[in-house]
Length: 320
Ligand code: MN3
Ligand code: MN3
Image (cartoon, rainbow, N blue to C red; front, side):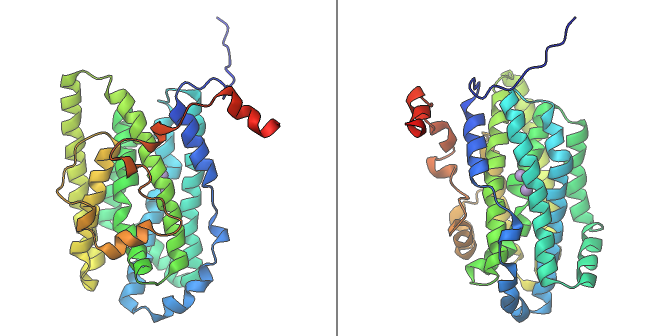
């Protein structure tokens, strides 16, 4: 038997979502080094010790999650691609996960001393709730079926990050730490595309299951989400009780858990909607760079799906 090695042909697209996602992701490429973080130092000095401690811990937790996505998260779903273009999109996603993980270190090196940074990483690498969420997700990445891995990835991207994102968005809404928040908004913009894309690929596979299989899978998926949510509640309490923000953060978590289910084409689990979330935080999400909701402008359909097929004329425009 001869093995044929196949060259990727971007002129024979099997799934237009691969192409439009590639274009979206490359268009919104960014690097942490281009954000003037030191402009936030005046704001930083005015925060209380408890607030500074919170900021360090939420970014420590986010660093752990983005590290995981850049290392095992993308690798876990790479083996199950449906098209060669999907793998190219995953390459982009994986690199950006490394940019995300690195960007928190840029924030630390601007705001914190060397010994504070060491303490943050020590805390992150030993916090029970953080370690538990990393373990739950990673075990699915290692041992789960193809569709289960995509669910784990989408839950992480569209839900588990938000206990951490709440803090910088809250400060942004209060006109504080604007450059730190700019980085977070760029990350959220990326995660929004990642969650939608992987959720879309999930739906293609899910729709191929029989009704009984779908029902069984749904039970597993909702159990997992609830297990993660319970852990997230405890994590939120340890972080936010001291400042009295816990209940607001939990509302934000439930709202984002529903968005994760929406990305997977499923019904919401919680009654919370955008109007229940602290408007200061929603405002932080929707201003400036951020395009957080650009996929949901058309309900739970995909704006990506509205992309018009390219015609021959489109390719000729730039050549005239
Ligand atoms: Mn990321
Ligand atoms: Mn991501």
